[in-house]
Length: 114
Length: 117
Image 1 (cartoon, rainbow over the protein chains, first blue to last red):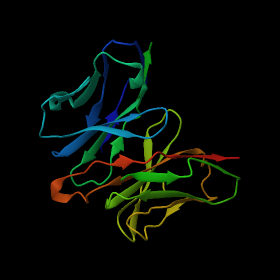
Image 2: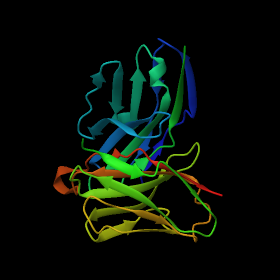
Image 3: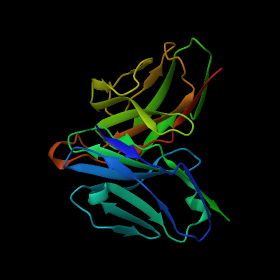
Image 4: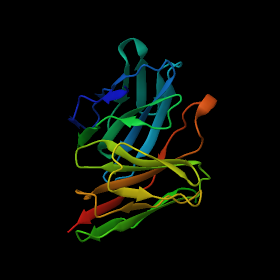
């Protein structure tokens, strides 16, 4: 069975601090895909990144970076120099190669305090 | 502009009434999905459709029904059989059918917040 665990329910940091959101996954598939989505207060889920299981390179996009480690089944997300606009709920998700469905974690609510 | 639209943004329903939530996409995506989100919870899959005139139950399909008569439209009906329908409903679409190219990314609409009075 596939499972995504986001152990941090809620995090608060002061603006400009760095923050890491943890994501641990379980799957028996050898080919799979990992995602991060952002849900701002408006409610719409915004796609941030997709990684496939064969690409363990870390990725950086501006202040966002992702650390994928198959050895620990983790796909962590770091925001550098956080800003108030980063306040949102962040979801990690997993999909198998032959699976049209995505399994979502329960999300981490991030508060960036001014 | 290309995207996914959901209407209405807020919906109020009396107990015992059926209500239909709209989801339209002009992205030419093949697959469409309906999710339910309760406060402090992740997303739970209600129904999904990979092609026109075909759909499959998700994890919490009881009390819901869907249709997929057109590629761009995937309406969700919340029936009176759904015991606790108050929630935030999100529609999503995905470009491909998976297969050898792997899973494609799902893109989401703005959501509909349903409240049962």
